[in-house]
Image 1 (cartoon, helix red, strand yellow):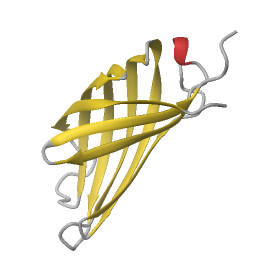
Image 2 (cartoon, one colour; image 1 turned 120 degrees about the vertical axis):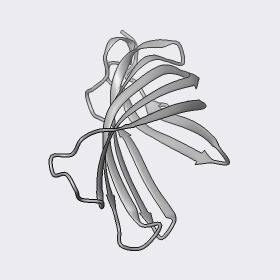
Image 3 (cartoon, rainbow, N blue to C red; image 1 turned 180 degrees about the vertical axis):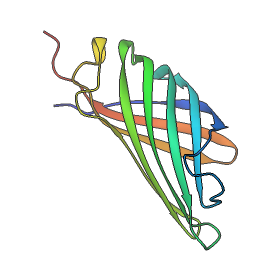
Length: 134
């Protein structure tokens, strides 16, 4: 199967949410809302949990995000799962499309999202496969 790509930029808004256990400064919970532009013309909505380490620059997050719109002209939606770890400022991030989460023209999508954040910009690249059209 051929790996397809789409690239562009995105904006993200993070809104703090209440935690089940209040008063723990090492944990956080946020709503995330994104707008993607470029090959992925879509919105994303999800929820993120964060955890801080005892050393500055060490933290982790997990998130589930539903992305709805068009990907290289194909309409539908899919879910992405995020796993981010930062060790003393060095990031490691993996964002995977949840298997069998695609709808519409994105039914059967599989792949990853590469998020590139720096210099005040948010860019992305989606690397994905789709089954042949019937």
